Image 1: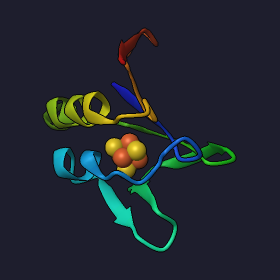
Image 2: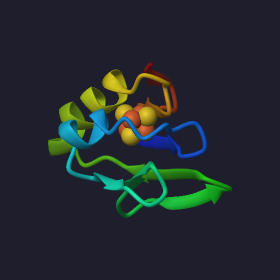
Image 3: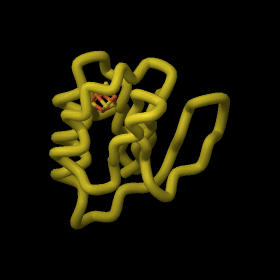
Image 4: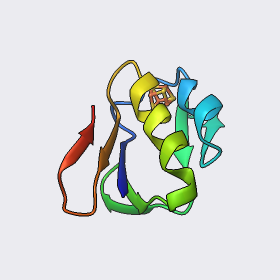
Length: 81
Ligand code: SF4
């Protein structure tokens, strides 16, 4: 599973932080931060999701009010949102 985080779209509501520990609050920027992620484009971050974190990552993607978090399965198909 792969997760993509569009930090430009993020509006810093921080619901994702409550769902998966990989997300944390960056109060100065008013945006979430995704740990261990690679910035593949400006403000677009990608990382793999360990199997034991799949549920938490999915919840993080589901609760984001602006769909800044996208999940893909190993075949590259979009799972959430
Ligand atoms: S839930 Fe969405 S808008 Fe809120 S901090 Fe996380 S990524 Fe940003």
